[in-house]
Image 1 (cartoon, rainbow, N blue to C red):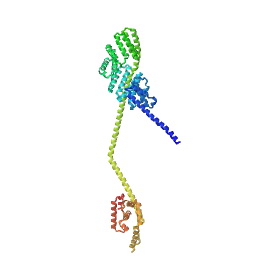
Image 2: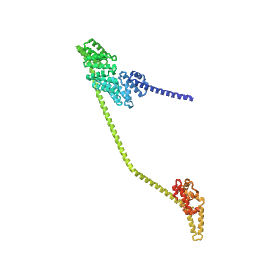
Image 3: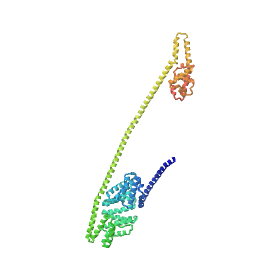
Image 4: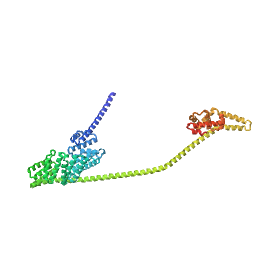
Length: 559
């Protein structure tokens, strides 16, 4: 039964451990997939997209994992030219990474790709807001490459809003930061975009300078597709400038680049050139090709404009009027969009001003805080120095006062102790003399009782000898030792403990000294001469002086 219970306990534990190990492995595998996708993102974005699509949403259990997957997947779609228009995916990353100092790079990326998604969906005002937030973080971490991408995105937004001045400004910034980042291809693409922006801003000569410089100085660093874009932009600018022969040369040169695919503008431009040369068959052929390329309303406007000009040149005014009507209808809708989008620059300027004011306010508060902190520290320091000065100044006096108080306290203790000792000694002496040691009193009484008698001397002598003999008795000596110890804090026992060389005669002498007997009385008790008593007393004193006794000073006060 015990074995069965153990099995029931062990099996769930094993299952839990197995699940934990599998969970850790799965989490590690997903993290490795994210890292691999990031490595492939620039060079093989299609492979990165496949890796990220293979991750099942049920395996993304943490907020961080969901946010990173959403960001990388949005990035992979953008890199593969799949234009998302719904920001629900990228918002997962924006909400998680926004404002987190630990993930500043991901914070920048999430706002940048949200700007791209909003741009794809035509929400240009919201797009510029996200791009501005991405710009702020990119500047903090000094990421020049993504600053270039962000400014290129802003330039595209202003292009869609038909604000050629701001379009030119931001594509120039993009070119500068791509150059700082050492991204040559991006630098060259942005250089061509500067030329396009010059054309849109009616600065054709500047555009021609850009294109000529590109073909002369940078064509060796560019691939065929990039050269094809340059020839396309250059020929388009020449047609606008009515330089048809030069434009035709570039378009024919463009035909020889297989990596470049012609668009509606190329077909319309070559058709317009052939129309000037009165080659009707070529005009019709290329206009049919152009019609097949129409995908946006701006393409339709361009197509109708070309057909309108051709109809005018052929004096087909009825067709020209129809094309004009169609073109105006579309342009009215474009004008409406332009008016709606005109708020974008003002909103951007407002945001920049707000950011600048917030920055100045933060700096002002910081300086104010620093000033208050320094002032407080300085004030506290001054107070401490003043206190320290007076403390050091009063320190000797305080020490002297404390020493005096301590000395007075010690003196009082000594005086009180001595008083108590004297009182105790006096009481004990009085007791001794009033009791069994009142030898002198008895001798005097005996003398008075026999006053005038011839036997007085003999009687006194007999009584003295009797008392002396009693005092030499060991019992009386033990009694004397006991009395001395009781009244003098065991002084006799302490003497024997601290000076082990003390003999019995020296102890007896010490006891008589404690009882405050005079040397003459001690001679009677010890049956010795007065001179010898003094010598014994001196030897005992020297022995105590030469000893290491703890209570040496107390012993010597009896001599």
